[in-house]
Structure formats: structure tokens, C-alpha cells
Length: 165
Image (tube, rainbow, N blue to C red; front, side, top):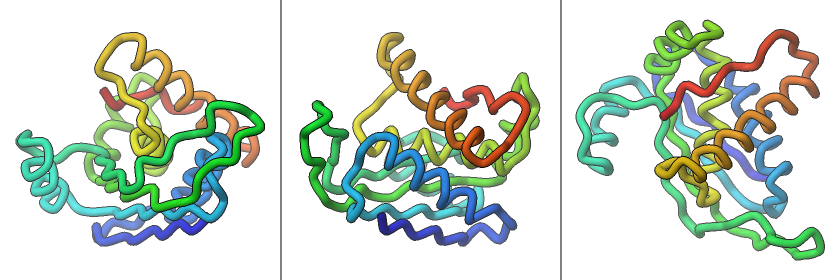
């Protein structure tokens, strides 16, 4: 799996954890091991510009996903996953920090960025949360992936509750 993490935000973030959880999420979703993903970490001004340009919404947001080849997880266990460019995930640590602090479980910025990375991966794979059934499926997968990654890394305590809407 080729995953690039580029921190342009000026904020120190745990880039290795972002890389690791993205790799874990893609493996759990059975995405071809030669697929490519880019994660870009930006400040609030850059995120606000992207949010306005692509969503026509004011203010910065936490995560945005820009799919390329519209890869999807294989439907069957014996199906060979296609290889390709997944796309870009853009994260904003300043928004993540506030969301983490405001969350019911009160978690760190890095924990929120890990959650948002998985959220972004799922969006790249075609998952959405517009409808209640879609939201239940996506957030269930998100929680399972984050919990699995945390367990694999020996992280204890409750995993971050979803703060993205």
C-alpha cells in the first residue's frame, strides 16, 4: 500500500499513527495492496477554502475526501480487489482538536485525527452517512476499524466516539 502523509498545517501531528491507521483500514476493507492514497494535513484557512470551493459551505471542516478511481471493497471473499488510486483525504488538526475536546469521551487531537482518517477512507470507498441506514453502516464500520487498530496497538480506554456528522 502506498500512502503518503503530507503535513502542511504547521501543527505537530502523529503522522505515523495516521499512516498506520489508514493502512489498517484499507487492509480491513480488503483494498488491493498496490493501491495508492494521499493524506494531506492543512490549517483552517486552507480547509475553509476547500470547503467553500467543493461543498459551497462556509468555514473549515474536519475532513474531506476526494476519490479518484472510485475503488470499492470486493463484494465476495474470493473476489480479487482492483488496484488503483484511492484519492486524497484532507484533515484539519485545529478542527480535530476542538472536536476531540468537545466529544463525550473527551479525546486528544491525534485520536480524533485517527478517527477522521478512517472516516475519510470510508468516504473514498463509497460509504456515506446521509441516510440513517447508511450512517449506521458507515459509523459501525468506522468504530470496528478504529477499535481493531487500537487493540492491535495495545491502546486502552474507550475509543473515540464518532464526532463527524
